[in-house]
Length: 241
View 1 (cartoon, rainbow, N blue to C red):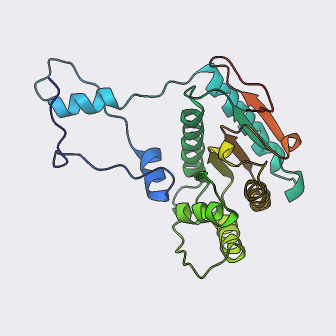
View 2: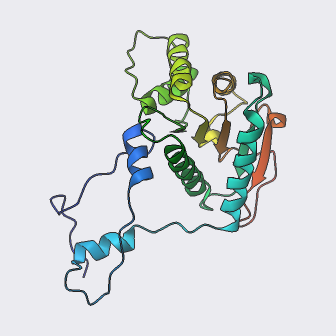
């Protein structure tokens, strides 16, 4: 019998989405639920349920290849001018672990940055957003602002928001930008093409690397290293679907 979920249970807290800084920081710093002996009377049912539903992520060879590729890009981009910086595209079928890999990559990178810069709580080494459906340039850059906790008003246009976001990215030392669901940018349509170009311009302010996940169509594939996750049958690149 499955016990009902109570929001008043000890330790329960609704998880904020990882696309806002509070949710991302909670994901990065949340300690895994420790395992106990099944016969331990101190291990309550809710604790056992939390442990089994957490679904710990295991490092796989495919994830290691992504980590290695991004580490190389960070080294290459460190001394490059804006137009010469390269990014990484990870492509693959649905439900093969692309978003899981991306989040594990960001978590590992941010924890390493915390160890390298102790006591500098104002740093924001990783930015993680998801492209909204039918995104316009203003909608997309507003996702950057939302993650960073910047207040956005209707009176601000995309140029003003973009300028504020780029200035803050430089100030916070952001080195790794993770963007999920980029395939929602349809470059065959004018709005999608404009948003894609606007995203490209924004990325020039990030000195490290940019990683795009789940992308099927891109206007400038020559500027990105394409890495296919070998987790099942892969689509052709670039895809015409």
